[in-house]
Image 1 (cartoon, rainbow, N blue to C red):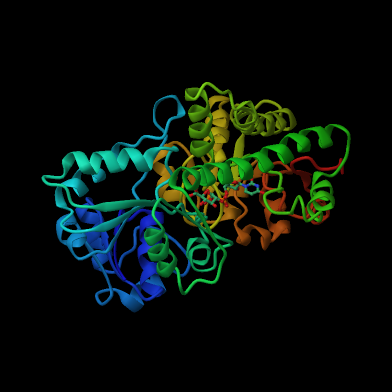
Image 2 (tube, rainbow, N blue to C red):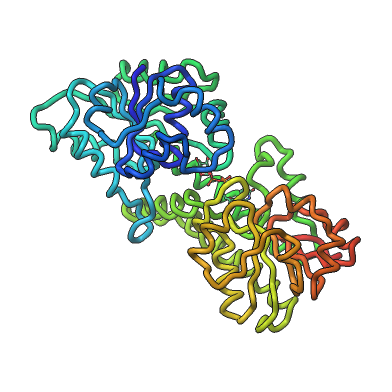
Length: 431
Ligand code: UGA
């Protein structure tokens, strides 16, 4: 099939590359000339495991990139919109880029197309986009809308695309459904077929539910810590019930990233607009906000006064395998540490470049041991696997204090305390 993907962010680029892998002829389009030039030169703007290898297999043959929308749309049977929908005013999704693309599509669509929205959008956006396309068409040319939300996690987007748990497609005409099914013919996964509005809500509902699971276990972690119960065991004991499931029940310093905070806010805002308070989801966000503060207060309480104390941070990105700092818990923790007068040292395998623009005063180090050097405490905020393999004796010997705060519950408390360090996790038993 001939497919054009508009937007080369992590969703658009992953989709373009993986659709080429599925055997389609794909053109990726972006307005950002530098970005497109870099991609054309083999430099991908995102760090996604496996993406570059597939890209290299098809680049220049069945996978090309351009800034010229008109030509790209002219050749396509299917146009996929995958532009960003960041958080706008009052938590609403900002649809500026999407509406702009719709207007341009109206101007350039030359013959029948199926226009698929892959961006995460409020319910009803498919209809709005169709109206905009029609408004800008010089003369009526038929097209059909569809929704095909993505469920890609940063850091495993390629795998999630090629081996999904399910594919969701929303459309109004059976013929469109047939085309969408054949687009994914080479993927073995259940396909949920529905109307466009339902598909749009499935995406928000999925992220809302996953965020709810995290806030649930995080709130319970605060409680379990008070009553001296290990939250990790609680999660294990609960999660083995197949109705509950173990995934996304990992207590930590809070969820971040470009999706959960924004999508839960957008969903609650949609609720308000329809006259309904989605109070559970509002609380999910509130718990996530207070989780970071709760963890910071623990640090402050254990160290005592922070003024002039060196504090080391290991991990800055919102999760491992990405350099993305959006809504990363490190942002709040560093802000509060700096406000209290602490001297913050930090290390992250890939996110320091981005972090430098946000926190210029932080001392960025070449490795975790330099972070530990003379620090009163070391705080882990991202569970990068390399932190598990640290020589903790070396860490202990170079620190001024002995406090380890594990904001991701991923170290073994007994191992850490075995080195004479004091371990503080999230919702753990007293040791
Ligand atoms: C999330 C969803 O998982 C994807 O399905 C969805 O497609 C994507 O948003 C999106 O809407 O585009 P992502 O934000 O990349 O993916 O990352 P996740 O792996 O879901 O993690 C989000 C945050 O939750 C991270 O900060 C992570 O540390 C935190 N988390 C995750 C926990 O604190 N505990 C857990 O048990 C799981």
